[in-house]
Image 1 (cartoon, rainbow, N blue to C red):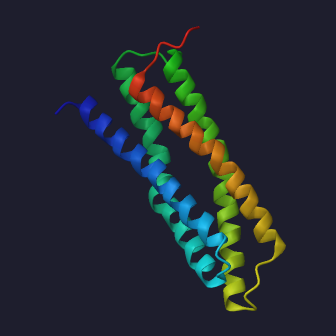
Image 2: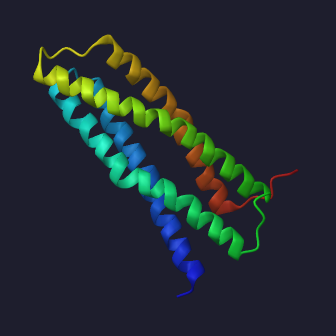
Length: 158
C-alpha cells in the first residue's frame, strides 16, 4: 500500500469521525436541552465535551495534515479552486468550533452545578445554548460542502 493511500484512508476515516462526532453530539445536546431534564443535561454536556477532546480535536489536526500532504503528493497547488474553497470552508467550520468548545465547557459546568443544586439552569446557560446551536449550523453546512468538494473536485469557474 502506498503512502498516498494510507493518507487517503486516514483522511477519510478522520473526516467521518470529525463530522459524525459533531453531528451526534449536536443531536444529543439539541434534544437533551429541550427535555427539561437537568440531570440528563449534566450527563450529555459532560460527554459532549469528552467526545470533542477524544475524537474531534485529534481529527481537526489529522484532516489538514493528511489533506495537504495528499495535495502536495498529487502536485496540486493550494490555489486549485476546489481545494482553496475546501480550505476556506474548513477554516470557517473551525472558526465556529473554537467558540463552541468554550461554550460547551461553560454549559457542562453550569449543568453539573444545577444538577447537584436546585435543578435550575441559569439564563446564561440558555444564552450559551442558543449560541452553541447557531454556530453549529454554519459549521455543519461548511463541512458538508467540503465533503462534496473532496469527492467531486469540480473545476469551479474562475
